[in-house]
Image 1 (cartoon, one colour):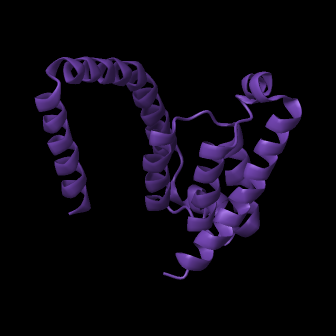
Image 2 (cartoon, helix red, strand yellow):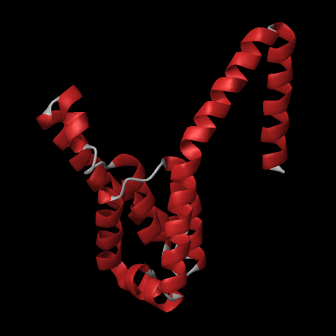
Amino acid sequence: MTTLILYGSALALLLLSYIKDKGKTKKALKKAWKSFENVLPQFLGIIFIIGLTLAVLKPEVISKVIGNESGIIGVIIAAVVGSVTLMPTFVAFPTADMLLKNGAGFAQVGALVSTLTLVGVVTYGLEAKYIGKKAAFYRNFIAFIFSFIVAYVIEKVVGGV
């Protein structure tokens, strides 16, 4: 139901925009399409890699490495993997869903998604260039620690379900 409301709202606002200024709306839609075309190869590539990985790794292996029984070691593994993986945010959530369906634990997936979206080991150099090495280090370090807090809270809230 929520999806229907969101899509309906987006469509209504798009129509409102079109009525107000057809030229700007068409220009915005063209930019959005170009952006979609630029992101699509990355998205498909990552989905392909995840699909291949899930085909090779049995759910039992995923459960053993980052399942509920893996405990804090699984959370650490997920956090480290998330920190060094470069993945668009919009791919992180479908990835989390696939992992959960294949036996991963909630806390472990929480740490993975949190580090995927907040920690950037791969992008550290670029970030350091703009905000400085010290600030980039502290930002990433605090985000990494925060990911463990996220994992703990998710485990307490959802883990018992």
